[in-house]
Length: 291
Image 1 (tube, rainbow, N blue to C red):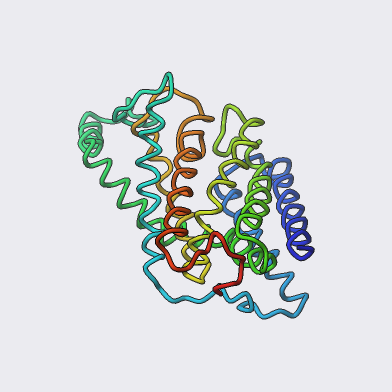
Image 2: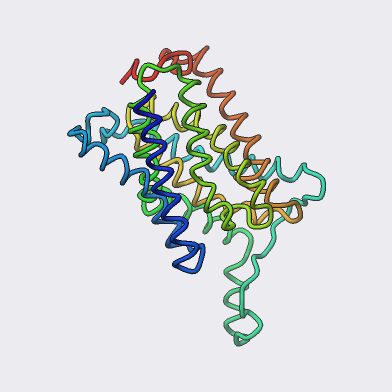
């Protein structure tokens, strides 16, 4: 546990210092800075491993052997986003229906260009385009960015917590992962309106998302499914804005209450599968039992 605590302190301090530099020295939040922020868990983990003279593959979770769980990690976010949209529509003040996204400067375009854009914004075209592009990004550029986090949370930290109960590890990783986000949440990431409350919503989201990712990692004995799942969720999360109007940033989407409820349900389904169908019994075991 000491190893896990030390890593958590180091990665949070290093990331928060960068966030302060981002805010005061670089003019505030930007997508580029947020992307760089995602690589701090990887950077800190590698630096610690080098200092301690540990082999980078010593965790046993960097095996690149594609299994069925990789495809589950890739496609499960589609189900989560779809269910999130349905649950989101049940909240008071939220309306379900396809909504064309606003295009800055649309009124200044020529009639021909406006017509082309409107043709591309056909609901079926938009849905298919969003789904295909999200799935592609989820296993490419988004997965690479997500790997920056997952190398720390679901590789190094999982190894540091080896021997701990699955749920104890989920609680530790979820809380650290959630609070690690707090500077960029205060800058408006995910919760642009309710920033302070958003810090605690992010912790809650990370807590319900961690069992899903950790289960995928333990099932595949590899960290890559977590990166794929994380990357695909990030890529598809914006799709909720196409179908939900009303509500607030604390309710809407994957990072809102609708998404948190959805992932809690998915975790429950995984638990039932793990306990009564699967032979692995990952969720009732300890980390490292099957690695």
